Length: 364
Image 1 (spheres, rainbow, N blue to C red):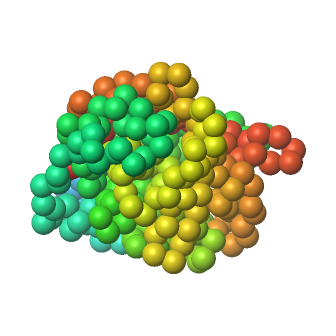
Image 2: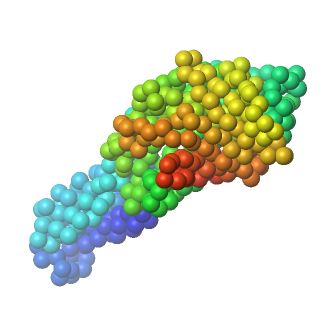
C-alpha cells in the first residue's frame, strides 16, 4: 500500500510539469486546451517539485515529508479548480493522497499512540538504579519448578530485572472466522512501580490501524485507532484493570522470569509439572497455573481472571492461556521465542494471537 501511494505521488507530481511546459510553450500539448499564464506555469512547476521532494523525503524516512505533500496537494487542487476543464482528473489523485498525509500529520501530535508510548517509556527509564544480583539463596524458598525455571533461563548470577524493552512480530485475528492479520509490536515494562506499555501496528483491508495498551499502577486502558484518525476502541474500568494485571503477570513469567522472586507472588505446587501463582498488585489479586516440561521450560500459562472485550464496552469471562516454546538466548537470558494467546470458549478454542519475540533487552 505504501508503494502504491508513493507511485501516485511521483506520477501526480510529474504530470504537473505539463502545465509548466504549456505555459512556457516548450512543447505543444493538445490535451491542454485552456491557455496557461507564465505565473500559473511557475506554480505548476512548484507543485511538481513539492510532490517530488515529498517523495524523496518519504523514501529517505524523513518525517517532514507530509508537510511538503500537504502544501503540494493544496496548490495542486487550486490549480485544478482554475483549469478544471483540462485538469479535473487530478482531483482523484489528491483525494487518494489526503489520507496518508493526514495520518502522517496526526502521528506527529503528542496524543498519537506511538508518541505517547515513547514519552511514557522515556520518563520511566530515567533514574533507574542498578539492580542487585540474583543468587541461589534468593530462590531457595520458591517451589522447585520455579527454581529450576529460573536456573534454566539464566536468571541466577545476573541482575534482577527492573524493566525490559521488547520488539515482536506476529499475527492476530478478530474472531474465529477472521483471517490472520500481520502485526508489529513494541513493548516496555517496569516492575518496581508496575507499568506496562504495549504499542501495536497493523492494517486491515489495506487501512492501517494502531493500538496502545497502557497500565500504570493498577489502572489500565486499551485504545485502538483506524488510520490514526478514528478511535474505535477505548477500554477501561475495573475488568480492564484485572485483565491487564493478568497480562502483567504473564509477561513476568514469560519475558522476565527473574521477577518471579517478587514477594507479591504467592506460590503453590500442584504436582510435578504445575504450579499456581497468585499475584497481588495493591488491591487487585489474580492467579494463574503455570505448566513446565522436563527441561524446566515454562510451556503454558492459564488464568481464569482475564476478560475478553472486542469493543471496550462489553466484557466476557473465559479461561485464557498462552502456550509458548522454542527457547532462545536474548542477551544472556533464555526465553520462549514463540507464543500464542488463546481464549477457551464454550464453542471451542479461539487462538487470536501468535507472537515471535524478535528482540528483548532487560534493564534498559
